[in-house]
Image 1: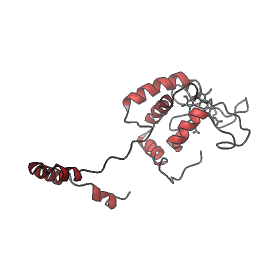
Image 2 (image 1 turned 135 degrees about the vertical axis):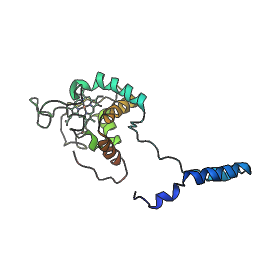
Image 3 (image 1 turned 135 degrees about the horizontal axis):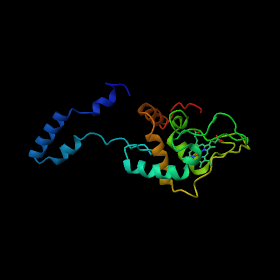
Image 4 (image 1 turned 60 degrees about the horizontal axis):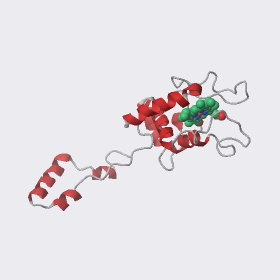
Length: 174
Ligand code: HEC
C-alpha cells in the first residue's frame, strides 16, 4: 500500500481522536466515540512470530520431529540440492539459505501434514523422504514448528514469506 494512499484516511491522528472521545464522553455520547475508533487490526498470519509461547513450543516440536533431517540448526542435509544416494532429494535447510520462506503458510502446513503429493506438488510417481506428520502431530503443533522456523529468519525474509500469503501473490517456484 502506498504511503498517503487511501488507507491513510483511516488512521486518524491520536490527539484528535482522544479529544473527540473526551468530548463525546463528557456529553455521554458513547456511540460517537465508538464510531471514531480506528478500524480493527488485520488478522494475524497463521505463523505468528509475535506469539512467543507458540515459538517456544514449536522449538520443542522441531527438535523432536524435524531436526533429525532438517538439522539441529535448521541447516538441512549436506548437498541438499542434489539427489542423494537413495535416489531421493535430501532434506533442505529451513534457515534463510533454503526455500521454506518462499512458500505461503497454507503450503508449508499442508506439506508438513500430508507430505508431497505426487501429481500436485511433484511429478506423478515422485518418491520423497519427507514424512506426512498429520497422524503424529496436531495442526497446532505443525503450526508451532513452522512458526519457530519462521522466527529464525531475518525480518526481511519473514516479511517476504508473509507477502506470499496474500491472494494473487506472485510466488517464486522453489
Ligand atoms: C525423515 C526426514 C525428515 C523429517 C523427520 C522431516 N522432514 Fe521435512 N523434508 C524432508 C525432505 C527429504 C524434504 C524434501 C523432499 C523432496 O523435495 O522430495 C523435506 C521438505 C520439507 C518441506 C518443504 C520445504 C520447501 O521449501 O519446499 C517442509 C515445509 C518440511 N520438510 C517441513 C518439515 C517439518 C516442519 C518437520 C518436522 C515436523 C519435518 N519437515 C521433518 C525430510 C524430513
